[in-house]
Image (tube, rainbow, N blue to C red):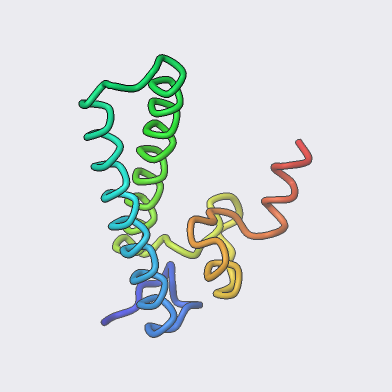
Length: 113
């Protein structure tokens, strides 16, 4: 696998481990959404249950979109780079928060604003 300029601070082994983790999370979330959709189609729950189901389904759909975007960033070579300052996000941070889009400094700055 050829490393792109954007992810050159990550080794190919690190990048592959992160990709695999993201793909596993995506598969897990996708199965969860299928189960939620089947439950929604059943429609036998009470109104409160129905609302909880819709909230959970919306959150799960958002998580799938974020995971898909992270995998796309791996393919384009922008994964692991801060979206604000373009510094490399350390592997240790990405291993804990694989959807991280900002380095620690920029994340703190965004949270303080």
